[in-house]
Length: 82
Image 1 (spheres, rainbow, N blue to C red):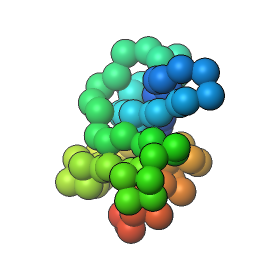
Image 2: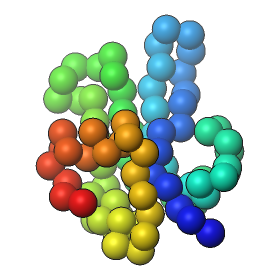
Image 3: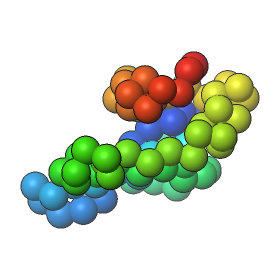
Image 4: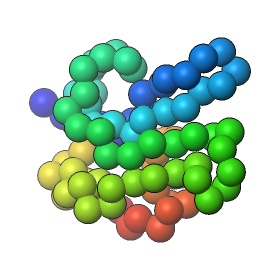
């Protein structure tokens, strides 16, 4: 099984928020997750937009999980090295 760190969409129309989750690469976007490692609220204030459990993210990355393009940008923004 290949794991992927990606966004899972929640919220309403024009008011989205996302959970940063680890899931099977083949699972649908809103399917079953292996672990939730953070959240991303694009509409919130700049300092409250992004939360990551950096310890768990690094653990998953070391075990072979690959981040999606968007999550990769968010990790760089937060300063988590890959």
